[in-house]
Image 1 (cartoon, rainbow, N blue to C red):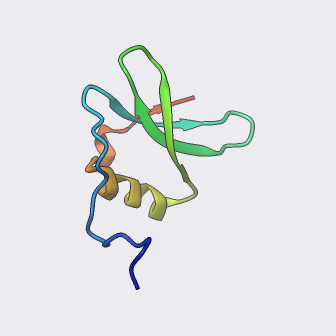
Image 2 (cartoon, rainbow, N blue to C red; image 1 turned 120 degrees about the vertical axis):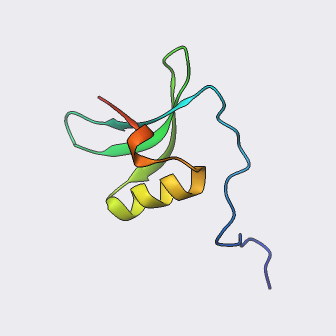
Length: 73
């Protein structure tokens, strides 16, 4: 029964036009969160990045290349 499952190849419906993909890292804890940065500088957190697997999932899910991701602190 598929009430709450998504298909594995489905990408997110949200559009992040005009927003730059970014990873924000905490200086104190080193915790890294991936999300999108808008033109005004506001960061919208999407998911926690615990390792390379999570980063690859973020890139695949939102159609982003690793080279495009900006790292902010």
